[in-house]
Length: 247
Image (cartoon, rainbow, N blue to C red; front, side):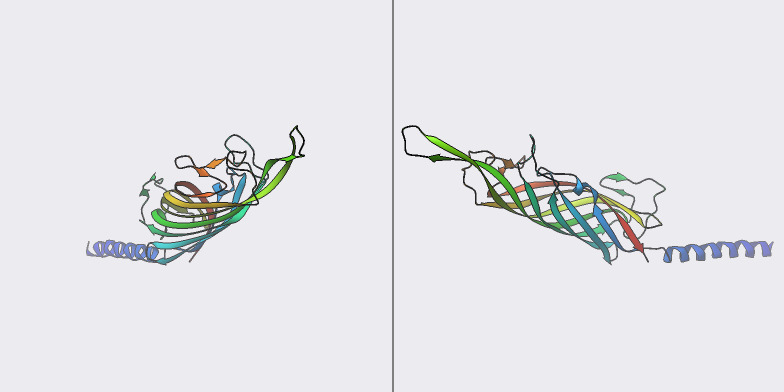
């Protein structure tokens, strides 16, 4: 009977030691390389943000994420909700400080029960600063009066001009990061914030009442796309796909 007790005690101690060793040796993402999938969908200027990002832990339950994107249009933009443009190019940079809760439950709900939690994964919230610089090429139709006769004569021609746009913003994010054992990683985030937008045009001839010079950007707070400054609300849904390199 005493031997049986010692056997069960040995089994319990062994199981505790093995569990502690597995917890201590649990793999953690050394760093993660991402791309934001939704940024490849065309925006109002029929352009996309071709981006790559790197997330690296630097404290317990905290990591920093940096993303660099090149903005380029798929082609001219036309349509009812689009802003008329021939080409749009630019640069997008963002930095994000993430705080993980090491929990499956967060602002966006609860992850499935079978989801495995690694260090620096699961539900999190974050603070992000971003900046974007773009140059948009647009065409306008200019009517030029010619001749000094009694009848007015006009010569119509197309003029290409540039709109230089700068945006600087802050936002708060809530999301989930899920890491598979093989390293495949997905990250879903919703962010709310505000951005300061400033734009000005070069080589433009027509006034603000002409088309497309009168087009505006923004819904709640609107400003002329060609020029002006405004503080605008910013809402972003982001789905990042990537690969985590585990320790």
